[in-house]
Structures are given as structure tokens and as C-alpha cells.
Length: 427
Image 1 (cartoon, rainbow, N blue to C red):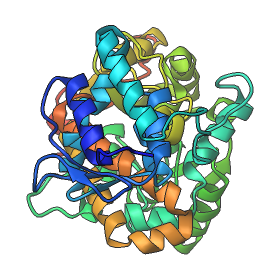
Image 2: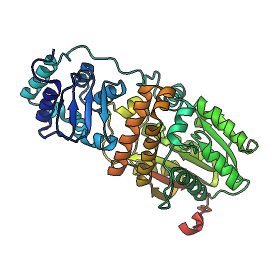
Image 3: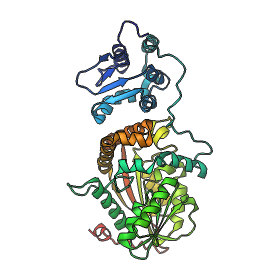
């Protein structure tokens, strides 16, 4: 029973007391009541279970579990809605430190009156549940499968025909998602100095877009490796359709098991986030050993701001990138050089990722019903929340993405890289 006070009024009253500020979002309860500012984004609480989740997990993970399960909805502009509930997300990390005994009493009283007190609900089935030693080969395969083996048709909806799952390079005012992704692939090939007859290793090759572009446009031979069965299946099909089967070898293989080096160049685009900081030095040493002297590595990687590592579970770690973790770009550069590589160039593409994510969100929203049919409502909700939230994080500078170009120099110090950026980019 919710008593004589409407559900929405009771929830808004408690939240405003905890946050010590008026809410920037309107609330609708499961009883149909509404409270909060007019014409604001709407937080719809469909079930008492959502409140129970927040009692047990009063942070972004509790909110995310409710959203993925359909117990919470956000109506209106998704970006404005997420911005409006940001204080609720922040409050989770401050709750134990700042709630007074009176606040705690009000929270429990409201939960009792709303009938929300009870055992902790099970997480939605879309939450990752990995077993075994962290970053073992078996567990890494399971983590990659959780994220990428969602269905190739689902990814076609989100990513568009390019099937490139990393930020585009928006180098002209009239760029489209497809042209921005083609420009990104071209930028990587130029930075790597690809020429006919070279061998390229594409680590985390996805659906083969980078491998196909490099083979077709630069005449190189490519080995692409991924741990996703679905990616391998489609990538091999795309390679054959492009007439490049003699140049491109797509493998279901861990990069740690590649044994047919050396390579003239290595591209690693959106893969190192899965490695994590504890394994990054090993990753860097492995790629160093696979390069010939004078060979280049292009490491394209999302980065967090400097500061202590977060150890508490997050929505991203639970639902999107299990076992993945971001590092500051300075730590990435330091680890590459500790492995013997020389960092020669670093370019931030932070704003480019925000633009890309907004396009992916638009793609998903435009074909929402089809996406739900293919991947299920929970998985579609995960991707909507993840991509929209990430777009805001890139725009605010809370995370970034960088292309780090490094070289395995010759014993005498020669790098084979032209002395100016203009020369080696060909621009």
C-alpha cells in the first residue's frame, strides 16, 4: 500500500531531501501519479521492484538494472533525461558519507509505505556473469562473446553498413557516419605507412572493415584476429564478397597466440579497452615482439581521466564491457614505451566519438522495434543507455579516445618515419 500520499509525490520528496536540491526531472509512479517540474524529461517508475533495487544498490548500477529490466523508463529526449538524473547517479557514491540518520529514516519509511522493502532482486539476465581467472583466455573469450555475439543484424542496425565499431573521423562539415568511418580507416592506414606487399596484423578485427580497407586500398596482406564467433563468420563472408580472400586471413584467435610474425604494421582499434591496465604491459610486449624493426603500431583506445581506479561495479562493467577497464592515456603511452616501442604521435578524437555515438543512438532509435525483435528488449535498452550515456561522457570530457602511433625502432635508432607529420600523413 502507498498510503494517502501519491507515489510520485513521496518519491520526489525523498529524493529532493537527499540531494538537497530541486529535481530536474519529472517522476511518474506506478499508480499514475506525477510530480516534479512540468515540461521536464519524465522518469517513469513502473514497479516497486525498481525502488527495491535502489535500496540495495543506491547508485548507477541500481538505476541501470531497473532500466534494463523495464521497471524504469526515460521519456523525452534521452540526452536531456540522462543529464537530468545525473545528480541521482552521483548521489550513490556520496550516500553513506552524507545521509543523516533522519534521511535514512525517511528513505526507509518511504520504502515501507510504498511496499518496496524486501529481498534484493536478481539482476536482469543481460548482466554479465563470468567465471574463472580474470583475463584468462577462456574468460576473455566469454567476455568478448557477451559483448559482440549479440547478433550481426543487430549491429548492422546500430553501426550502419560500414560495420565499424569505433569512432569515425568527422573531417568535413558535411560528413556522414559512413564517410566518417571511411576517413578513420584511411587515417589509420596513412599513419601506419602501409604500402603494397606489407603484412598488417589487425588485433580485434571486428567484422573485417579495417582489414578489407587496408587490403583493397593499399595492397597489403592482412591477418585479422578476434574472439567473437559471429564476427569471424561475417568478416570472412565480407572478405570473400570483396574479392580479397587471397589477401585477408580472418582468424578466431587470441592475439597472444599469433605466432607467424613479424608484421610490418599492427592496428589495434577499440580492442585495448578489453585488455585492462593490469595486462596492458603484456599486451604491449606481445605486439612489440610481433613487429619487425621499423614496424609501426596504431593503438586506438578510450581513456579515462587521471586519478584512482574505480573498484566498485558500474553499469558499463556489468552490462557492456565485462572485465574491461579504461586507463589514462599517459599510462598507455608509458606502457608502450616500457615494452620497447617509441611513441611518435598522439591524437585525441574525443569530440569525434561523441558525434559517432549520437549517430548510433539515432540508428537504434529509428529502428527500435526491429532491434528489440533481434536482440530482445533488455539488450536493446542496454545499448541505448550505454551509447547515450557515453556520448554525454565524451562531450563533457569525462572520458576521451586517442590514437597513439608507436614504432619499433631499429637497433641504431632509425624509425623509418618521415620527420614531419605532413609527410607521413600524405596531407
